[in-house]
Amino acid sequence: MSNSSQKIPIIIDCDPGQDDALMLFLALNAPELDVRGIVACGGNVPLARTELNCRILVEMAGRLDVPVFAGCDGPMVEQLFTAEYLHGETGIDGIDFFEPTIKKRDQHGVDFIIETLRAADVDEITLVPTGPLTNIAMALRKAPDILPKIKQIVLMGGASFEGGNVTPSAEFNIYVDPHAADVVMRCGRPIVMFGLDVTHQVMTDPQLVADIRSLDNKVAHASAGMLDFFGQYDAAKYSAEGGPLHDPCTIAWLLEPSIFDLKPCHVAIETTSKLTRGHTAVDFWGVTENTPNVEWAFKANKQRFFALLIERLAQY
Image 1 (cartoon, rainbow, N blue to C red):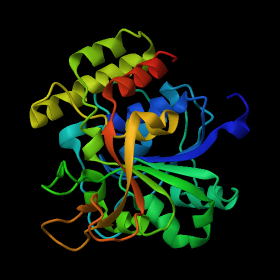
Image 2 (image 1 turned 90 degrees about the horizontal axis):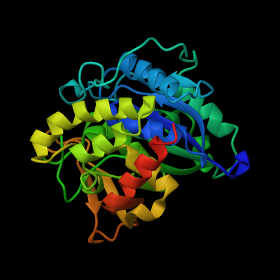
Image 3 (image 1 turned 180 degrees about the horizontal axis):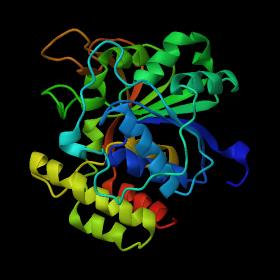
Image 4 (image 1 turned 90 degrees about the vertical axis):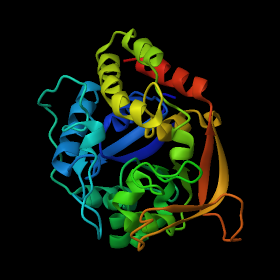
C-alpha cells in the first residue's frame, strides 16, 4: 500500500507503558497506517514520563517524522492514579534508556487532535487511544464540531466477564478517568473496544519473548526486555507465564481484523460509585434494549495475534 491515500490515517493517544510500546512498534512500521501524530497522557506513569517515553519509542522505531505532543496531565475530575507497581518507575522499564533527539511539539496534544480533525474529511481519521481517555474527551468537549471527522475510535479499555484489574470491577484506563470514558461512550461515533475480556487471551510466555529476542534487531531486543519486566508482575497476578498484551490489540485489529471476534453492545460507564468507579457495564446479552454504541471484542486468535506481532517486529 504505497499510495498514502490508501493508508488508514490515525492519531495515537497513549501512556507508555510496555504494552503501549509494543502497540507503537506495531503501528510505526505498518505500511497500512498513516500515523499523523502521537499524543501522550498521564496514566501508567505521569505525563512528563509518558511524553518522554513516546519520544524514545518513536526514535527507536526510526520514525523521526512522526510528531509527539503532550496532552492532559491528569483526569477531568479525579486525581491521577498511576501504575509504577506494574510498569516500573519509568513506565517502560526493561530497555536501555537514552535522551531522544526528537523534541515534543509545543502545541497541546488536545489542540493537535482538534486541528487535525478540523482539517480532515468527514469520516477520515481513526483515533487509537490506549490509555485513559482524557485527551479524547477534552477534544470532544472543546470542539464538538470535530465529531463528523472521526471515522472510528479504536480503544483499549474496560472489562466485562473478566472483572477488573485495578478494582474488582474496573479496568485501569477507565478507572483512571471514568468521566472521560463516559464522554467518549456517549459521543455517537463508531467505537471498537478491546477490554480485558480479550486482552487476557493474548498472554505472553517465555517462548514468545525468546522468539522476539531472536529476531535480533534493536526494536525486538527492546520489546523482549520490556516483556521480561512487564511479565514478572502479571505472571504472579494471573498465575500465568507472562502478562497480557492489552494495547497492541488495537493496532492488530486495524491490520488484521479477523484476528478478533466483535459483538455490538451498549456500554455505559460508572462515574459516581466509590465501589465500582470505572466499571464498564457491557450489555453483552442485550438485556437493556439500549442501542449498541460499541463493537465489543470478546475473542482473540492468540496464534495469529502473535504471528502478526513477530512478523512486524522482524521488519525493523
